Amino acid sequence: MIENGRGHADYEKRWQKQGDELFTDIPAFTYPVISGRDAFFASSEANVIKGDHIRLNYINIGYELFSRKEVQVLPFERIQLFAVASNLGILWRANKDKIDPDNISIYPEQRTITIGLRSNF
Image (tube, rainbow, N blue to C red):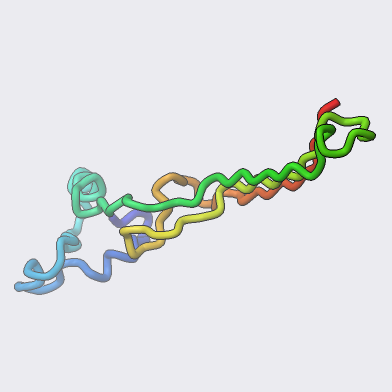
């Protein structure tokens, strides 16, 4: 909870006076610091948030422009236009902290969009 004189932002919600235990589960500050007590709290259920979410993860769209069946003079079997998009984002999440349960990195997942033209000989 407290390390090198710095504490987590939740520390402001700690027990400070009698009766605070009715509305907070953040333990009071004790001196000297008991590292085992802080480690126990850091791993406790009080720090678990819901990970339920709905994500738009992958879309693949294709359209056949021409085929040899339709246009006999084409040197190709077919020509297709396609678009692929991945990691488009979270549509809904249960937690209010805007945490992405699939990404533990401090950097957001990269969104990718690919557009192309495909032909078969």
